[in-house]
Length: 317
Length: 258
Image (cartoon, rainbow over all chains, first blue to last red; front, side):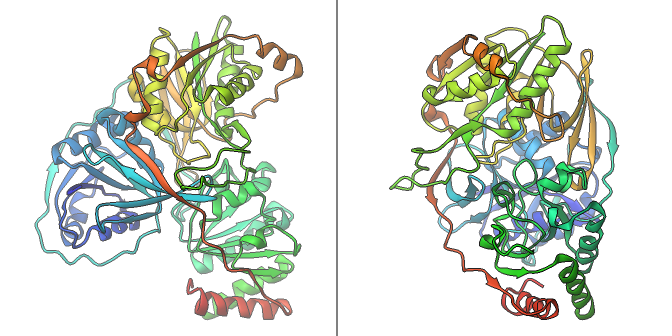
């Protein structure tokens, strides 16, 4: 595992936090590091990559829109040319989809959703299992190629300290064909980070009584730069879209701070958020199961507590 | 028209997980096994397409220990699948080995129009099997599909990605879809259909029959651990103003997350 390729992703023209987390874990470990970027922006991240000791960046600028066919071809080719036997990526909709397909093409091992990664004495990996009811160590076959996806927000971001030259290598391996074509992109309303990548989440359930009361959570979320989530009950009632659902048949999240408002804590909900570092529960029912998982609990009326919390945070931040 | 649905049997969400004494795996004694909830969306969609296309047939495929897996195949058949393929294997497999087994079993059946599977399974939260299977079958796929127009031989599928954004693809058959919530509402099997399902044919084979072995896995999970005991919840008392002040203080000074 000495030759490593990191899947580079961009946000607002620089490296995404998840990519920096991966590169930080490799700092000072003496590895040969390549990166691969699908889409534009190679020049804007080249300097950042150099600081993390990345010697070559494989890029196909024309891949601006995700298509499993063309992206599989590009990443498979980048991995082959780099000679890497360990591929690291931050877990998200694109990487989970394309790299699974790449693994099958290259006959490589694939594991996603890892939450612990270190290079002390070989590679050490762990991941949650059974909705975080337990966790397991991950053994990779050392003789083959392995693709490892880490959950976002699990590793510290360090400043790159290397001074090395990163060479951009343009590829044209990825092409679409007519079996699969992008027809349209329907942009989501939210400008915020997705729940799966958010470091702070404010989530609402039935205790909010009706859809329009989610505005109260939006206000709180805006003050602390959080993303708003929801329980299954309110998604099924049509108050908010499915993209906001946390839990089984929704999203699995692991932010630093999860504030659950008016959520009783059905096991299906807990399955998706119990990996959060700090959980705050606000509920009128002192026997609600959510309090068993919480770090801090407030038994009280959300309509009194949440606006006060928003006010106080606004005044002090 | 032939459609395949690939499903996995997983522990019920409500099940309490215990570990084997040597921490090599979970202790499966007392575990209640169910069809992976996301696979129910896949079954429902395949059956709906069958009902709209005269002469169409749906085959459910799964890998696992026969003694318990048969039950889940019967569940899928009670929902409307016509027959089943059971690949008997006692050991847990990684996604790629499972995809290889399914690909070989499907290829042996001849021509097909579409393959459905759930976007992920709730036991390991892996979402890899679908895209891997599509690659091994050399067909296109669209993952995380919450809306599908399936008339004719070019389908339109909406894929859900971050922030509620949707990527809309047109896919020429044969192709593979991984299903997520929103695609449909899985039906409950009626009693007559449950009875009928008991008589539907299941083709049985082993992993070895397909030229594979559980030794082929490239990823092994071990050293299972239960989570560390959680500190008991701190309940904040007083009127709402006092509760909020205390909370903000704790989040800053103790938890250091603000």
